[in-house]
Amino acid sequence: MQVGDTGREIHSVLLTTDVTTDVVNEAIILGCDLIISHHPLLFHGLKQVCGQTPQARVVEMAIKHDIAIYSAHTNLDSVVGGINTRLAEIIGLDDVRLLTESGLGAIGRLPKPMNYLDFIGTIRTKLNSTYVRYTRPAKEKVQTVALCGGAGAEFIDEAIDQGADVYLTADCKYHEFQDVEGRIGLIDIDHWYSERHAREIFRDILAPLCIPCIISKQDKTPIQLWQEQKN
Image (cartoon, rainbow, N blue to C red; front, side):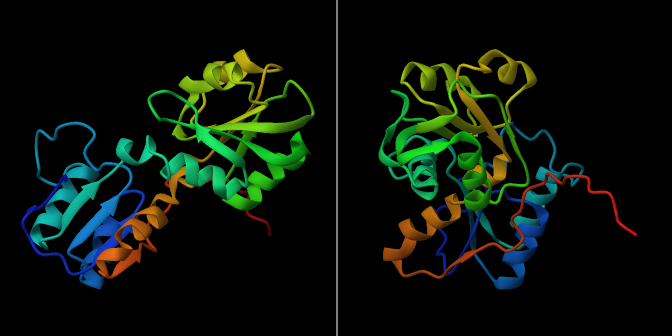
């Protein structure tokens, strides 16, 4: 719980990946009492709440309109049925299990081997990411796939140790691509697209409470790609 009164009665909920001013405005218009997000609004402590940063503006808006904000993040990352196992289901993996002892990441198998570039095309289609970056794989046919929604480059070696042909994550650095080339097919996608299904997970969790839950239409990746305008 990041903003609001834990004892307050809730009548409707807005579900989002990130909490932005656009999302809070949407909650105000829709009359939602609670925003549930995957990414925490406050990673670091605020020294001032006077509208000078996006986070401070969101806190101000939420308090003024009596909107509570709750963020899940690691609790949803490191659990069966959470971010990573749901991502594996979306991709179409079988025999899915957690990748690490801490519960982060997932690993599973495609129903049958695929050409690596065809698999990348499948990822692009199913996740609709704004971009897909990748390295040369160890082999052209892939079947065992490891993944971690969000920034999960720290688990690349774990994926290799467990025999994965491919590792899918986000926010990889240049040298991380360089270090694994030819050892495993490293696929990097937009962070937001790798975790946006958190909203559907929240909706499923809350369904037994019979409280209106709305998936935000203002929740979107902050990353835009330059495209030259055609005359």
